[in-house]
Image 1 (cartoon, helix red, strand yellow):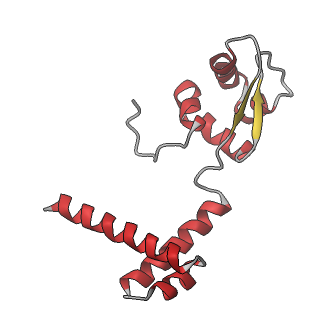
Image 2 (cartoon, rainbow, N blue to C red; image 1 turned 90 degrees about the vertical axis):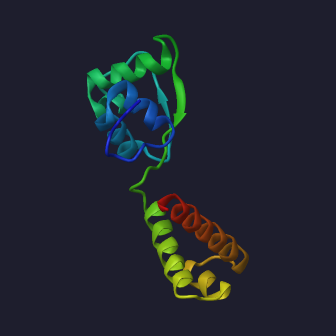
Length: 138
């Protein structure tokens, strides 16, 4: 088990981190995040994986996923630095600010660009998480 101060990587990136290290996993996420890619058994210097992480980590990843025989199709998660994730966090922060200011469901929805039903559900989850975290403190 990894004992790192870094947040855990999503999906297959966590598996790549175990095999070839965090730097390799992050390099793959940056190079191919959000895409379907093939990890091949026989690597060439022109292969995307070798270009992204270097020959030795690429070979470790290839051996892990292909067992030296066939290619394996995988989807690389977008990761935490994507524009989508950044926009989502910004919307969540705006909705949390509205909730903490006592705003209505419609105002929360407007702040987050979502429906009022989704705003009510978000508020419920947010308040429940606050309640759980406050009960752990005591």
